[in-house]
Image (cartoon, rainbow, N blue to C red; front, side):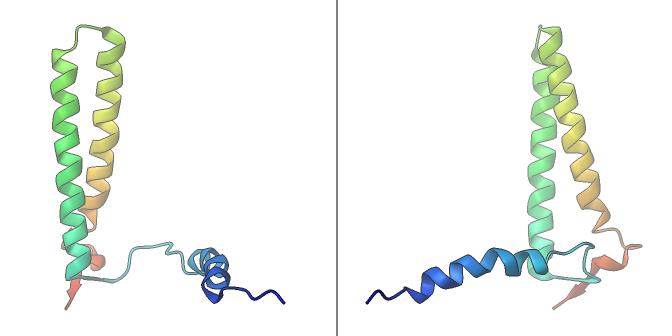
Length: 97
C-alpha cells in the first residue's frame, strides 16, 4: 500500500490558491511592513538609475550608451510607479498599524 505525503498534496494546491487571490489593484490601506518594502524598492530603483546614468556617461560605444539610457528610463518608470503608492493624494497611502 502506498501512502502519500500530505505536504506534497498541499504544495500542488498552493499555486491555484495564489492565482485566485491575485491583487488587481493596490490596497486602500498599507501596513508598516508594506511601507518598508516600498521604501526599500524605491531605494534600489534609485541606486540602479544612478548606476545606469553613470555608465551611460562613461561609455564610448553608442549601442551601449543607448542600452544604458533605456535601462535607466525603465527603472525611472518603475520608481515613479512605486512613488505613486506613497502620494498623500492616493488613498492607498493611508497606513494601517
